[in-house]
Image (cartoon, rainbow, N blue to C red):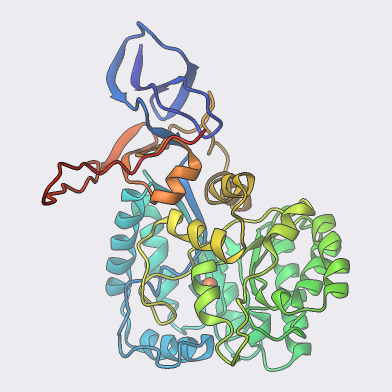
Amino acid sequence: MFDLIVKGGTLPDGRVPDIGITGTRITAVEALDGAEAGETLDATGNLVSPPFVDPHFHMDATLSYGTPRINQSGTLLEGIALWGELKQIATIDEMKARALSYCDWAVSMGLLAIRSHVDTCDPDLKGAQALIEVREAVRPYLDLQLVAFPQDGFYRDPQAEALTLRALDMGLDVVGGIPHFERTMADGTASVAALCRIAAERGLPIDLHCDETDDPNSRHIETLIAETLRHGLQGRATGSHLTSMHSMDNYYVSKLLPMMAEAEVACIPNPLINIVIQGRHDTFPKRRGLTRVKEMRAHGITVGWGQDCVLDPWYPLGTADMLDVAFMGLHVAQMTHPDDMRACFDMVTLENARIMGLDGYELAPGCMASLVVLDAGDPVEALRLRATRRAVIARGKIVAHTPAAEAQLDLPGRPARIQRRHCRP
Ligand code: FE2
């Protein structure tokens, strides 16, 4: 007797088992003909996927677009300045309301785990207070990890070091930083060393905004690798963005990537943001600014895709849809081979979960009963259609469902019906 059976869906690997759920766990992945269940969800013909995971987001800034003004230049630096204005006037209640609204969007899109950076350069640590409360409120259905992120620079802002440590004492989960925003390359290097030491001392993961610039001389990833090895942080250190690598000398990168693999430093590019923020100072040709995704994967480096921003000082669009993120990444990184497209789907599910250190985010007995039923036949079709999330199950409960989207045609001269699903050979 199961509490819930998801019948007949196709898994990303092509198998078509039923999924039996008992309480909050998956207890069977096999044919369950004749088995009794409290509830049955028919997923025949649809893709059943592990939940989507976003390992890089800013929930304290989300859904604030236009407050107090928009980013005129579209650059990272104006975005940081604009956020500096916004955080003066933001309140804890208002940040909580925006964050909870975003979490609702996320759940409706099957996005059930998010790592959010939280600015720790506010003397009142309003963002940390607000998001700790949000983390608790959403805990029954969404895993929210919080990164102590000294947005104005660990050393550039004289209060940042003490505030970041205080935010970690309050219970934030991950150590963050922004070495390329420090005043000097030396300060950036020192900040990476200090932050890795803090992560090691506290037994926490570290995830730095690292080299988010077009400047090929921004090489803080090198220090992150060395300090990861020095402090034994292998497998829990991440470089977010790494956009400078796009512009680096190829010989230097040929030394860097094996070292990243050796240190098990993961990478989170954020393609929606990288493609609009980078290259702003270029004329033509204009650089794409995305890091070397295919090359990293070929070296065995764990690479995810992050959303980063939705309707905030840096980005005027976004819908909490990790398929949008993977779709953009796939294009900018030219990952159009079928194997690469499949990999892009895995990056926004399994790979992102691995980067966040989440257990039980697979579709197997013993795993958490969280999954998404998509109006698509396989992962590539899900990407192509940015498929409707027909149902979202979080910890054994159906928490969202969406009717199939189908346009009704009324053409002169001939009957017609839209059929966007397409079975490939
Ligand atoms: Fe970010």
